Every structure is written in structure tokens, then in C-alpha cells.
Image 1: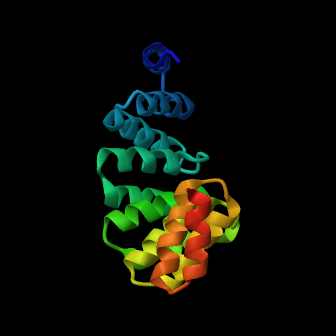
Image 2: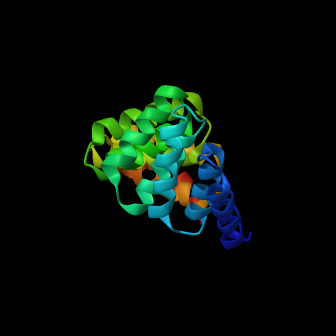
Length: 184
């Protein structure tokens, strides 16, 4: 919990080392990220990547910091590198955020498809894709995902409400009434 102390210790270790050690840079970068200093986190992650370009999850960490810093194109690139090295649902989810921010709705939907393929029972992914599908005027697809989220978490009023809204859009009035009733 002492981020400033951790940053100070890793800074001392880096200064006293004859050559930079990637693990120290990465640890300090993660501490900077948690402290909200995304610029310094990105700088440490870049230096760490220069030393060890295949360090586990480093592109992912860099991408998260870039998203927070508003460097959306860079974040998309970092998540793409992470996916190339070790594809995971969370990497696809985060790249979808970058692609969505860049206006690449097709790419964002494709990333959500990939994330859901590996985690079909994750309601948050279903809700995200339902909202994206709604934005793309795929109301039937939006309803299917919202319905899946409501089925997966039948006690979550927000999922039930979303399912009800999209059910009305595709004339599934009985399902809308059922989910609104459950939400209430």
C-alpha cells in the first residue's frame, strides 16, 4: 500500500545497479500506475520492453497506462502486441476499449466476440457487447447479449433493466415484462 515507498526503493535499486534491470523498471512502473502517474509508468514500461521485449503482461500494463493517459492509438498497439504474445479475454476487452474510442466499432465488436468466446459466462462482457451492438443498430444481437447477462445474473437489476429495454426494441414484450418485474 505504500506506493511512494515502493517507488523510492525501486528508484534506489535502479540507480545503484550498473545496468537497468527490467523487473525493477516494471515493478516501479506498476507502482507509478497505481499511484496515478501514468506518464512515468509508461516511461518505465517502455524501458522495460527495450530490455525484455517478451516480458509477461508488459504490453498489457503499458496499454492500460496509455488508455488512462489518453494515448488511445498507442494503447491499441500495446494490446495488439499483448494479444500476439499471449491472447487473453481481458486483453481483447481492453483493446476493444481503445478501438471503440478510436471509432473502430467493427474492430471493437470483433474483440468482444473473441473475449466472449473464451469467457461466455461473463456478464460484463455480454453487457459491453449488447451496448456496442445497440450502437451498431443490431438490436436483435443487443437483446441476445442483454438476455444472456440477465440470465447469468438474474439478481442484477441493471442487467434485467437492460434486457427489458432491448426486449422492447425487438418486440419481445413478454420478456420485457418479465425482466422489468424481476428488476423491480
